[in-house]
Image (cartoon, rainbow, N blue to C red):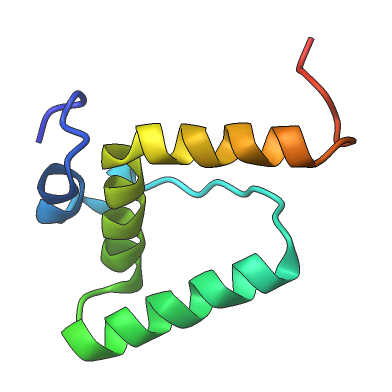
Length: 88
């Protein structure tokens, strides 16, 4: 898998050695975090794939649909004010 392979197959296909794994954290609404955790658990149990593999596939699919994500973010920005604002 190359660093440029952002397909679902490319991101989730190879089992990387432990040293290539990384842990990150982002804040999100609890309801979204709970829904994500539930979906990861459901897919983990139904496919018997490791949870990191399931999450990698979920993220890869989202990355394949960036235009839809950007459209949703644009619609959200038009309907919601507040937040931290742009990074400086």
